[in-house]
Image 1 (cartoon, rainbow, N blue to C red):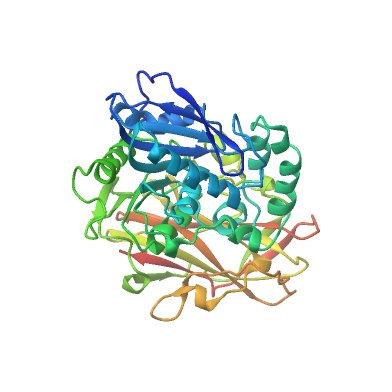
Image 2: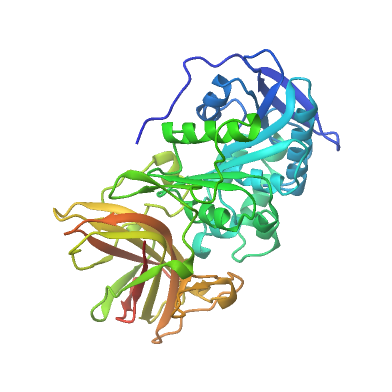
Length: 496
């Protein structure tokens, strides 16, 4: 894995103001093409302030390659004005469409544009691309959610990224984005337990997007599942890259090279088709520690499923009062700003109970989604959060985190039509509606089908898998109790 690429020198940008149809104005920084002639434009639309160094990490390559590069504040942030209507509002998406069409018609642009960016600035690309603005040739959403309920704000029905509003809105510069909108964020998003129109309106309608899309993420990013879901669902030209990364850095050498080829093909008609179906997925294999190129993502029906039953007999697992009362996690890199401050769930919890597989006798290759079917019984706890982690235990005892998932027990209901199944009918990608809460009954076994984030792994002889489980209360009590994990528990793993 290489370090982030940073430019030796970034040219001084030109400030622009672009008026929207409702009278609002977007504040834009334009980095003119070094060619001196009209050039294709690469655009980022951000709530993280257009002046942020994080954008330069991503845009260093396009600037050096002679594209017109523009970074715009969303309305209500930085220098952009106009009434702010909330996170990823329809008005914000209208602004994106109008801005792209203004850029495509500008004298400095050839008429071809591309959207790039990560996280929030990846999801807004999907929402804008669905509108097919004139001149938009391609998008590159990296480390981006697709479903704002399941990927962003309520992973497994559990509040996630709850500190996002405080950090972003307080940095917006606009008083109207720091008061009423901050209050609305914590009331309408954080304070809403179930899926509904608020979340559906800001999630991407993936099946309707025809603009070519280059999806990028890392195996340790908390939006990994959403990125893979988006890649699979998009009907148009597409490419996927997954590396050994977390949510940051946005740009490694491998990502820079992929982005350069992507923009060159769609904006300048150079190079080979990056969306050719026989080689449109570039996936790092953990264990082999190298990138593999393949045709797309494996279909559930094509996978040979390994059913691992980690629990030999009833196993007591404490249900702890909070996530902060669990033991520390196994050794792994934790980015304090990205992982800890977001309470996203990725890498934050320890393991109250752990179960190991038998050592591998021969190499094992895994590629695809993972599902945990946890069967538990408890008394005196109406609701709890299940946090599960898969790790690799080396022959020398060294532990490396691999992937994880989580689910609130009261959200365990399944929509079979939205779920994906093995040929034997077992759920491997659960479709949880997250529309009601069903309390956990005393003394009765309940089955929680937990979506574990996907993997691409080579296990060597002598290595084992470890399932780590932590349960924390999510009802009104703080009294520690126990659950019993039953032998009917199993993990479905995708043999590649």
